[in-house]
Image (cartoon, rainbow, N blue to C red):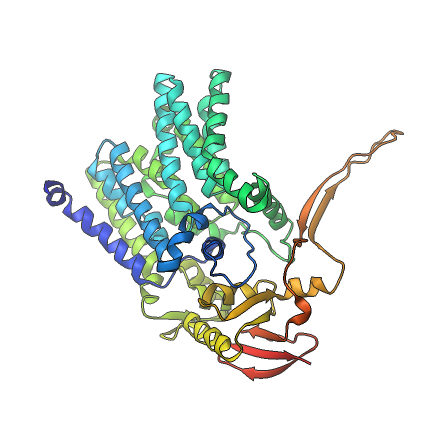
Length: 492
């Protein structure tokens, strides 16, 4: 145990991070349900149809464990991946302890500690892919290209956005290299992607189903989303400030002429990725780049500058995790009902305060109130299918929180309304260039999202509807009972 005595303070620091992540009720508000619910669905415990715009692989990997451990297992596996990421930074940096400490206190690491999702596995894959491409730049050996391609593909199997980071990596390092090396990189990306392709073929009958669906979802979001309104994260000064808070402070020194030229391939790649993040400002994405940023910059810091960056990082990290500490035994209460349920990070706390002019802390979690209500609903109306509204995805909340076998199905109000019409299209876009000459033909390119034509739900037999939080007035139903957070209606 000599290593423990030598690195005991690093172990203590990471242990503190683990305790915080496991203690807080916060799981990460962005897309967490897409991964949690897929796992629950594939384990046979989800009383609803599934709707996810992301890879199903993360959920599928966890599905067998959910039968025993429920959603907590996602946090455990993500913390294991985070531990592997810390170890990898230490190894790739040449076992430099100052670099290790920079990463252990990095705001991006502490911010992402309790988050459930594929970012951690993507960050691990991306770090080692970059490592092998750096070796390739020095040796020219195709073996390194193969390793890097395999890791990019594996990362893409779990997280779609790594496609862009991986594409930038390949372009920067393979530009003006042998064409065969580029094809080797792409071939191994496809090999790494195989788990996702096989799963898609098994679930949907089409190997690239979720890749296309995710791409269509991105295009739909750019166009305002399938429900109208703002579908993607806008770029504002407020959002950019948050991004710069979590980018490692030491990274910016690499933009000096001498260091940029010395590490030009890495810096061009990181800069392209950073521009992509700024175009769609989400703080969680920075964790994918933070290991490389810190490894490159850590070795150039004087002892005095290193201490200053350590202090600044600790202060920012403490600020970022302060909402997680509040949510160990309580939560925030504001007009942002979605976050009252799924939790608040610091950005959400500031948004709530700006919206309401105040922010209350309560020890009664809305999540627990909804769980109690949905359990009582299942007891009072056993073996029923419930129409859930008012929003198209309100059903997801109840299906996510209910663990049991006494509910036949939670049904989306959107699917219910579509069942009463011949309409099946949710979103559709066509591009039709008009010829300027007397051509007999015109081409068009289009795509969209439809309701699944294979639908086993008997909508006509639904006798009860449930309204969650907001006002809900389903046509043909009358209110018969109120719970704390739910309202029950019966068909007339």
